[in-house]
Amino acid sequence: MGDRIFQKLANPELLNRSPIFVFAADPLAAGGVQGLGMERTPQPHYRTRPEFLQLLRTMTQDGFIDGLLMTPADAEVLALQEKIFDHSPVTPCVRMNAETGIWNPRFGQYRQQFSLPFQTVPLTDAAYCEEMAGRVTACHVHIGLYSITLNNDVYHDERTLNAYLNFAKAVGKMSTFYHFLEVFLPNVNRKGLSDEQCGAYVADSIVRTMSYLRQRERPLWIKTEFTTPEIWRQLCAFDPTLIIGALGGPRHSARRTLQLAHDVVANGGKVILFGRTVFEEDNPRLIAKALRAVLDRSQSVEEAHDEYQRALRQT
Image (cartoon, rainbow, N blue to C red; front, side):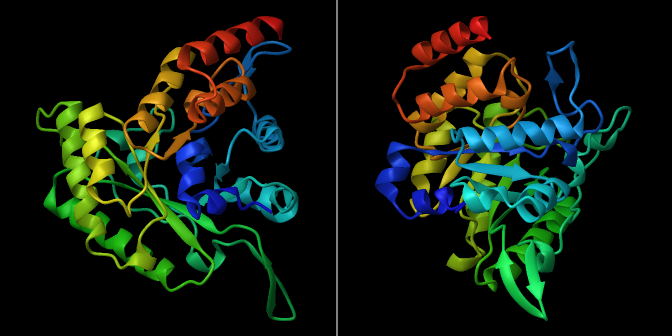
C-alpha cells in the first residue's frame, strides 16, 4: 500500500528499467488562487482546490505516477481523512518546508530577495499518524520534501544550510520517515553566471552538503534542475550512492516536457518530479501516461508525443 517508490529504491534493476515519476502537486506552497492550472470545461477557468483535489485522486487512480507530492493541507485530506493511498501503490509525499524563494503570490516580491528557510510541518506531525489511547495505530506518509536555494552568499547560505542539516539529522533519528532534497539554482545572486555555470555551482554544493551527513541522514534522492547533459552526467556519476532527479520547471510544451524526461534518464537521472509541466497541460492525465512511456522506454519521445496529440484530439 503506497510503497511503489520504496520498491523501486530497493531494486536497482527495477529503478533503471522504470525510473521514479513523482507528480509534484504542491503548487499552493508557492502560488495562490491562480496557481493550480486551468480547467477547460465547461468553460476555461482557473482550477479551484476541490477540482485540484479531484485531479489528484484521478491521477493516483490512473497509476502512471509512482508518487504524489502534496501540501500539508492536501495530504491531510487525501492521506489521512480519505486514506486513498492505503489502497493504492502510489506513494504519498508531503512538502516539509516552503522556503521564501518559492513564495509567489500575485504582486509579491519575495522571489527577488534572498531565499530564507521556512518550515511548514513539524517532524512530529509529518507522518500523519493516527493515535488511540496514546498509542500510534497507523502512519500514512513516510516521505517528505525539503527544499533549499543557495545563492553564493555566505550569510544567507549558512542560515539555509544549518536549517537543512538540523532537519536531516532529526529525520535520521526517525525509524519510518525519510526525506528527499530539492536544490534550486540561485534565485538572486547569479553574478553573471549562465545556467550551465549555475548548474555546476549547484552540483558542487550538493556533493559538498552530502559530505556532512551520515547515511541514514541523507535524502532518498536529490531533485534539482537539469541544465546541460555534461553537468548532469558529472553529478549523476560522481557518487553512485546518491540518486539524482530533475524538477520540471514551468510548462513550455508537451514535446519539450517529454524531451526533458528523456534527457534526464538518458544522462543518468533516476527520478523526475514534474508539477506545472503536468497540471498546466491540456490534459494532465494523458501527459502523465506519455511521460510514463518515455521513462520506461516503451516509446520514443516522438512516439509518445504523437500519441498524446492524437488522444487530445479525441477528447
